[in-house]
Amino acid sequence: MAQFDQLPRELRQWLATAILPWSAKSVLKHWKAALLRAGGDKGRACALLSELEARCIARDASLIWGACHPAATPANTATRPSPRAMR
Image 1 (cartoon, rainbow, N blue to C red):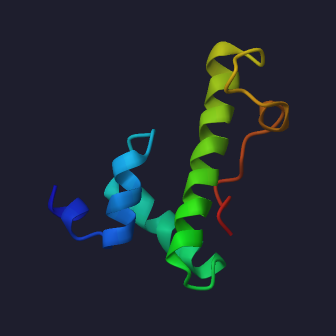
Image 2 (cartoon, rainbow, N blue to C red):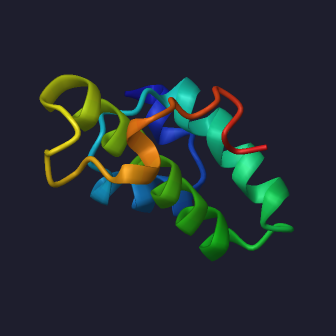
């Protein structure tokens, strides 16, 4: 819990509505990459995290339940996102 308490306020707020169970270490890594990509704009960084989360959910849905699952979008069923999706 202490690791989560040390996260930036905006990131903790984003986590409060996140669907996936992010670890503090993982979400902080993606947060830093999103901030860099967003030029320091914290709102845009949160949007980028949401996009990443949606891609992960779509990928997992297609792998677990198949391409016909509502969360599995055609763009995400053929390939898995790169581990460096935020770069």
